[in-house]
Length: 224
Image (cartoon, rainbow, N blue to C red; front, side, top):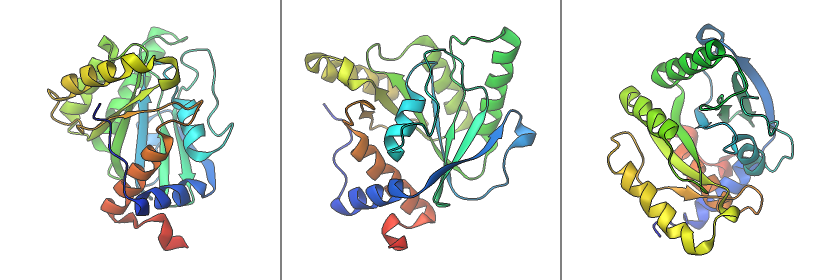
């Protein structure tokens, strides 16, 4: 299994410090004209409805209700921006695939996501969440195709690791890697996480801290 190797101790500590900063809801945008002014670097979280985006955001930040979780697909209906100590913006995107909304509304969300991913200057990476129990679905493949066309760097995060048998995890990772090898904008290494048990969360925090450092944001240690 070639899940992203453990980051250096420095970036693990940087990730811990980064995600220990205050994290607050900052902005909601339902149209491209309604986006917040450019500021801190942004990372976006995309995925099918009920893939666990809100749960992952809560796990990363150590909050129980930063992002609202729901069993109703399509609950996130805007681009929701959260400020992480003014250092980084976390962007929760509407789920794609099945959603409890009209076809017109879903089409509007899709267009908003495409425009945001294609032309947002502060956006440094999109994290594509894929249900680890099922692997890549057609809707995920379509999303990856759009990201490739937009030349937007993205990285896959397999979710719900605690619900996948350990004997099946390596096979799920290998199948995902094989699909990513054909995608020009995909970052080749992936994560397999569980928001419930915390598996993989520390590695993801460390990688995000490293990404922020690479884009001129320093490390969390710079804030003491």
